[in-house]
Length: 191
Image (cartoon, rainbow, N blue to C red; front, side, top):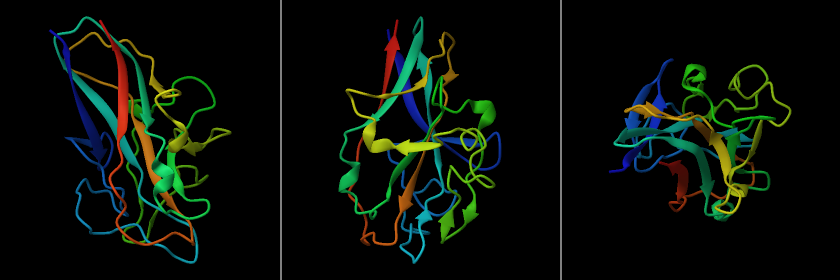
């Protein structure tokens, strides 16, 4: 037998409400829907989507799951998010990059306009905004160099891993339109 993995997105006030997802639309509200309500906007100043807190729910028959990593196909730069636009990932100066469940923080901002940057010193994600390098470009996390999200050893059914926290950064020279779907991947070690 083997473990079963469900990708979850948490929304709402702490401790958050988990929903299993097959896609994640980055938007300017704390909703887990794939419609075009509250899309990211291009403005005369840099704007942000609300951040998305995503983890794995592990169930099934397994002895141990560990070494949770996350990466992109290295093609996120084809999204036309502008000169300094990107898909940002919360980052830590050392240790696991993933945010523990106990440190989950609801994404906030001005709905329909902008989310708070993960890195914002006042309103940013408290698990990341005290770091030297608060965010990094998720496009740099590839299959050859995945981000280590969680080094914990999971042995019980069910288990929930730490979060990868991501958001869209939209520069003033971005190009409008719905961006094509991109694949983000979790990778684990399982016994």
